[in-house]
Length: 111
Length: 114
Image (cartoon, rainbow over all chains, first blue to last red; front, side, top):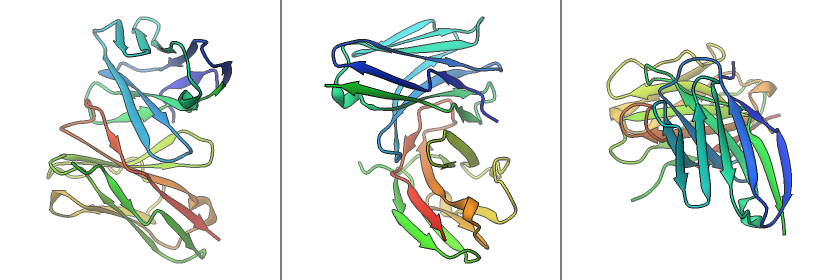
């Protein structure tokens, strides 16, 4: 069963706009990670936020985590056509032995 | 250094045949994972190897699926008597230590069962 659920499932924006994707999960976590996938092949790790962190930045990426609401968001600022991909959140359980992926958000950035 | 590699990149097989998928993790990574991704879907966890410990096989969908990790490095995922519903992309990942750390993914093997 899926731990993380992304919202929206698909998002289409113009280049230069910001893209926000949300992820909700059900059980306690050690950390939450965001990954990007191009063309249905390998995933690339983007950012990891630990359960005791509330916000993290990496370049044009900003991730927030609200453990009380069991939710996270990924913000991509000043989007580019090259950001077009599927984005997945994944949660790590407290035992650290399970990484569970959500269904993903398909982002399309139009030039 | 080299990333995670998988072979073959594509595999077409007839229903009922056995297939073996290979994963070469990043050197030194103690943890190795197998996932399955059906078209347009999220990743489904299959199996997790951590060092010399017994693997976590809780995600394997049936007893037709098995995996080995020899010498703490290369892993092989075997699917016996393949069915059409086994068609998917099979992704391998490795990481330092436990899954608390980021995972590095291979390019995947696209399996098509005809």
